[in-house]
Length: 378
Image (cartoon, rainbow, N blue to C red; front, top):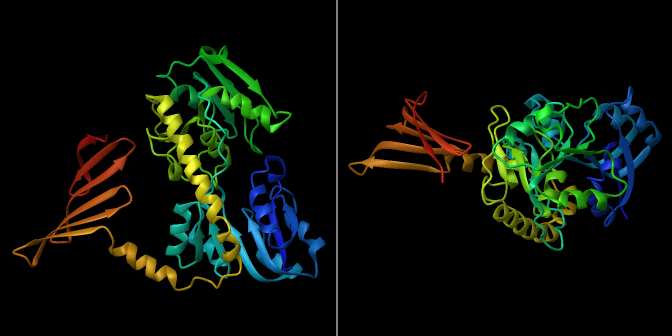
């Protein structure tokens, strides 16, 4: 059996959020696990125990160690990187150059498409956890909020829930490293019940199940295990309109999205219908994941996709274009579409109008820059 070195973030020992991948790798390889703590004073020292070892495959999950130092200790034939959008999605193009010899497997479509555009060998697959055996709606006045970040705190939650009749907020008070807890205002302090680490995962799930509403705990996600498990239980998830949350949630249909930079009170209508839609969506997704997850094993040793990105980039450049001809041959109006935006160009070069989707509105700009009117989306 081929040997695989799996380097994972040390924090996942507690959360078990990457356990599904480790189990998948062990089904086909002899796996040696190395836990990497980026907060350690000398995190690369963890590789010294691997000195002079040889592996067929190196797999990095989320962590981005010094590759030169790693190569001095370990030899391998194939290199694979599973990046997380929240950790590396905002890094500049120069950062990604060091992974040009890697097969990159993305759980975020946004990051996958960006890396393809950079000419990297990227594959995309969407993860779904196993859904609950049955849907229990919970109390529509009860909210579950796990504070993990300083900035996504109870003050923001209070602002989002201002138009919702809230009876109780369960705050799971377990923050990520170097984050700070925020105390609630007196107006809602009496509605809050706290928890820290639960004795068992099942105990935490029971508390979540009693609440119809679930506040996604982070601004961006790599996979988003916490909010995905909530959706798999049929919770109505309230999340920032950013990856990977907006790659799963359609606002008003199977969850609720908001603009973190300009948060407004959420209008939550037909919560039970949203819960039902979320539960059914996760059931369908899990069936697809169960079928497709073995593609990951094929991608580990696949040749680098050095040519595919040019084909895809060319397709993206010319897709979703409509040309309206005058007299059957003169291009009068060219309509270009690109991810939430439309550009209306006279003769193909004079920008006369631009429309941009923003939350539940479509905003139209005269000459591409002057906002002239808004249209509510259905």
